[in-house]
Image (cartoon, rainbow, N blue to C red; front, side, top):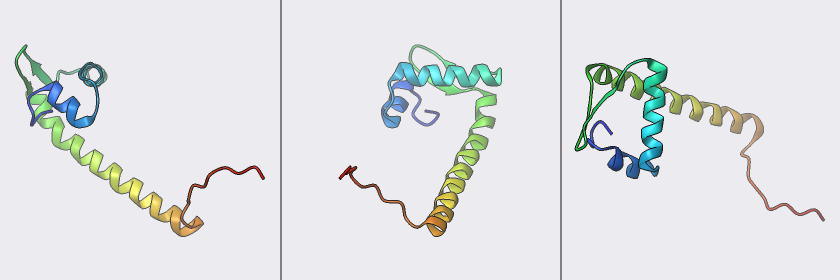
Length: 90
């Protein structure tokens, strides 16, 4: 959203509704106790705090992705690859 300048464009890219994305951002801002975005009827821009928060958030998301990949690899080595099959009771 920071790069796109629009909640609607960001929501489209994330396959969310614009109101749903707005609610998520509002909840995050409430949890943090800060505004991350300046909002007008025509644009959205990061606040100073938002500019500082963005690289930290990206780093955490990247680390989460790395952690999840590592856990999947460990699980595959330990248990073998899990494959789904159709349920057949007989």
